Amino acid sequence: MGKCAFLFPGQGAQYVGMGKEMAENFPASRAVFEEADDILGYKLSNIIFQGEKKDLKKTEITQPAVLTTSIAILKVLREEGINPEGLAGLSLGEYSALVCAGVISFSDALLIVQKRSQYMQEAVPLGEGGMAAILGLTPEEVRIMCEQSMTLGHVEPANYNCPGQIVIAGHMQAVEEVCRLAKEKKARAVVLSVSVPFHCRLLYSIKDKMSALLENVPFFKPCVPFVSNVSANYLWDPEEIKRSLVVQVYSPVYWENSMRLLLKDGYDIFIEIGPGRVLTGFMKKISNEARAIHVEDKLTLARLITLLQEVQP
Figure (cartoon, one colour):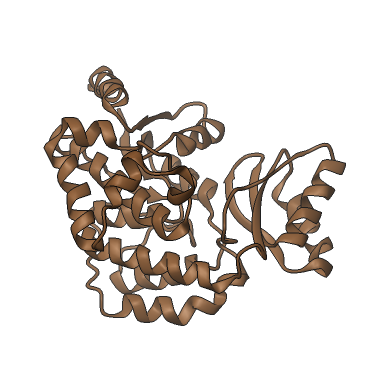
């Protein structure tokens, strides 16, 4: 057995009912949802467990909800004695990873992502920005298409997720033009259901707000290696991690490169903690040899425990 990395999903992984089974069966998990309700001053747990899909999709709800659910599931793994030797999180998921690493407290992370989501939503008027997944093209092909579409507004690659999948973000008209050009090349293009064009220059305007938000929050050195989205490299210095979280808001996410770094350094078990299995799917496209598994309920927890028992030397 090599090394184990925990991966944390970002916005888009959410669904009504996520984490509910864990909260009902594990007191440690339930306590995280209760803590989030207390910190935020409203019943986030009710929206997560039995709310309307349209409410959970609102950025200012989604971001605290995904963070809370991921940490609630993490608490159960910790009780089972399952701990990481490396960490990464996709976009919003970086905050979950940093809580896991002991860099920031859960309460601080929750309040940060609540504000972060509000800043993001305010930066680009509703309906003006968008994102799309381009499937089946190279990064260079997508970059050229973005350049060709700039006459209609700003658009750029925002997430380099895995081979053959690049997400673009920018002004809606320009995003739609890239989709049209991609389809001309017989590639697939899927417009994403998001209200904010994440990880592009349209969010540069919130840079100072994010810096001010993070300035007085205590950050500590990670207890295990943490890979940053922005650099696809390890970060150890607390101030450098703060700067990366600011830059991350308006810069591309280099997820595939981040995973290749972990693979190169001997990580071979990747556990996705939180709603859905998007990151598990990415890893299976990045490496045929790595074991990737997700945990979000009792069944997937049991599968993980079985896998870890099988690979123990």
